[in-house]
Length: 396
Image 1 (cartoon, one colour):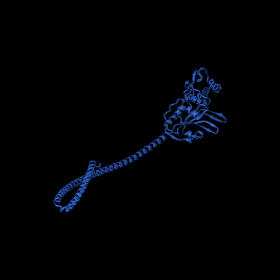
Image 2 (cartoon, rainbow, N blue to C red):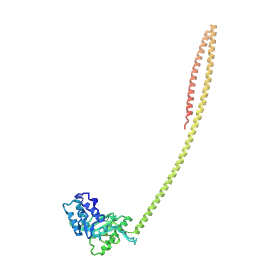
Image 3 (cartoon, rainbow, N blue to C red):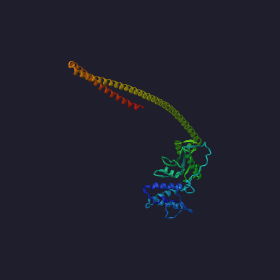
Image 4 (cartoon, one colour):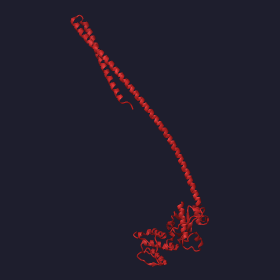
């Protein structure tokens, strides 16, 4: 028996019960095994003393160590677990740990046989004792640890106002794995001679645990076991569950098919909307290109007209400037002629002065007109430059 992994750890007095439960579960599951020397046993927790004990003396040894006040908390816990195992677990099968070995169930003969569902096992003859005015026995967690090889979800001890009835219900998963675990649980007890038939047939059942898979007979019979089964389960056959599963699968497939159809319709609607939006966008982009092209063409025409008009104005102004210069030259010549005439004749000087003044006024007006014409030419040239800039940067 290998107990070395726990030897280096210590526990407190408050942890004795929990540690006892762990060791007891390992003993019941077969993880820890008693070493035998012929017909005698060796205490697995007193490694320094390889003393041989008969079963009764080993029980006495375990009881004495667990009750000794001068022993360490761990020693008390492991010997209490050993004492409980010798009194309960070891007596339940011909060989130690045999109850923990799963037995493969036989193929199901009748698929219409009614079982309690969710799958439940019945556990009877759970050890109890009278304490403080009522019957007490193993807790559900302790029993679950003992049956851990069968993967129960939980174990529910059945109680009345008198206390623990010595019966318990073992709950398994609702699926087919749970059913297999429940049948393995039943096959294990039946193989060891502790099934339902053995429980009914034996006059003296002793202190062994008996267990089986709950069926219609258990469900419909009177008593606290049947009351719990009826309250928490229904009768269903393997065929019933298979048909129910098939119906659920059919509904699921139909529901999924309907969802796929709805999503396909929605996808088609999205594709139509996408096509409409794309066509509308392409149309708008085409119209925009046409508008931009028309706008640029119109701007180009306006610029060409402006350039021609400006050139015409420049040409006309140039002609006017030439005319003004010619007239100014004529006036200068006329003024000189008048000066010459005035020098020859004082008689006409006064009238000549008047005519000179008139010519001076006309000359001043012509100079002003020339300045105005020059300003107009500058404005036209500025306008032409602006038109050139617009021509170099058409709208896109």
